[in-house]
Image (cartoon, rainbow, N blue to C red; front, side, top):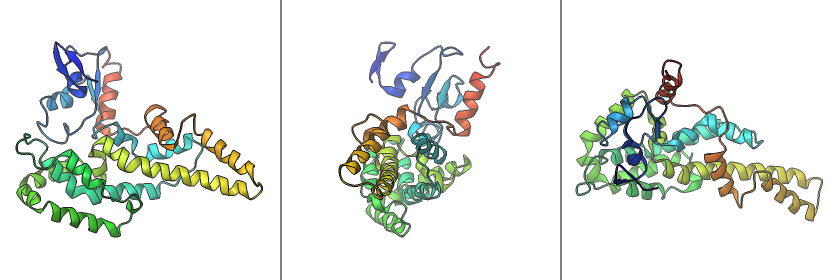
Amino acid sequence: KGASVGGVAANGKEQLMRIANLGPHKIVCVDADFDLLMDAYSNYSERVRQDPYVVHTTYYAIESILADVSFYQSFFQSLGISVQTTEYEDQLKWISLTCLDLFLLLLSFAKDDSHHRSFWLKDFAACLNTIKKGEVGNWEKTSYYKKRWRREYASLFDSKQHEISSIYQKILQEGFSDEHCYAFMNGHELYNLFIRPLWEKRLIQSIDSKIEAFKENHRGPAIAEYKTQCYQELGDRSNLKAVLDHSYYHNKPVPLQLPDKTANKITDLFSTSGMC
């Protein structure tokens, strides 16, 4: 929420980055956004990178870390649901490779001022919203979406060829591949448009499977009662969306696989020497 730091109004990350006199007993934790991916992305990019007392996510946001395969597996294990990760891994790759060109276009405009910015996050999100939920993971559709967006924004792609090439090389130099593009997307968009629907689908499949097995030996009202019980076991939430939102953000199972840069900063910060 908005607040005042030093008498100046600020919001979110900007508010935190204005806090002075950080040290072993006073740290801030922020989403990386594009500050690690793009030089001078914001006024505090270098501080995010260099200040040992600013802990960052490496990827765009916490949602990007929580979308990882290891968290996906431990999340469902915490709910007593066994999952195979192969399909989910494939879906993350699909999101990355299908949206890569469009994502690079977004980054190419990220540092332009508002008067010269022709492609915004809202435009990126609008394109992602055209992807039908059932088509995530369908590789035959990848070419369709990529060609569609290339046609729609042909003039922008042409005008930003140099910037797109430079940003892409930076991503590769940082050790990330095309298949990891999803991790740098806006966290809320990633979760709302892709991760939650995929995880919700898996939850429904698990519940339906349990109900079908129950039906083999039960009839009538007992089935409805069992269905209610299955949902109640997921937590005292009004619906699956609420169950997922709560568990995803507030009931994090372990282990949580952190990106190297984030893990290294935390290790240095909380080592014996770092806290002295």
